[in-house]
Length: 358
Image (tube, rainbow, N blue to C red):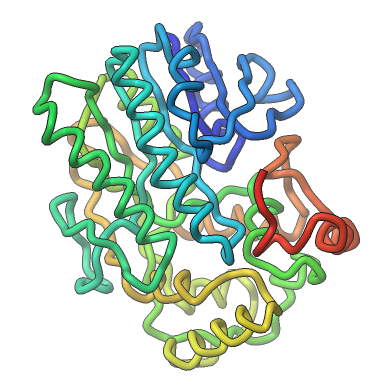
């Protein structure tokens, strides 16, 4: 099977390359990324193309890449720069439209899209919802808005073509973690001047006691994609490990003492510190964590035969072990950068929250 994967060097992309290699099938794998990785480990047996899906000509440039593909897996997404939301929207929403246009033009049979729990609307916090729940997103979160808008692109396509075009799969996982992505993920969410190992040495964890979020290991998300590829399964699929993660679960995993801090107060502090350029994440991430529902994964179990191998506690422990170890891969998005290197890049090419990419 010839499979084109956008964002193939990222968190889920790396896990999917491992999963497809472990299956022993002779897939022809094509990766589309801005910065191709060194051909080592899971990135070795992949034909790489350097392309920014946010570009105005992305659809035209993607057409010869996806031509002849049996399936396209669309994982490409942006998390930084948080102060350049126009660019992030061009990556997330525009990139989804571009890959869908290219797949349709080249008569690709199957498009698998990485959506998120973030596409779901508020209103059922702490309760499980199935795939019929509203995908209008969380208005205060740019990430959630873009995930919702990307699904709207898919909705319009399916309405216009009514089963005659590209078959579309939408994966809606909880928050995705894995050891090897620790360096990359912490770089997105921590100030560059703070070593990420600080996270595992916090004496207290000031967080709202209401926290209740779905998480899932990247390997289990990759397994769901592989199963959908094998079966040609279309439609939406929730993906989450059990049980959901609470504030006390996080505190226990960190060895910290949990201290109740209302989400409204914490949200204000996050917003002020982001506006003061003291840390790189906007308040929308916190709003999303205290708004999105839990996930009923019955459809993935029934139609894909999917069952997560990692419990939520094991997945959380895996990524925290990665934080302690400084775990990384040779992929540009996931490689390790020291605080000194991050500070140097901030001086030479600009802070990551405003840096124009590429």
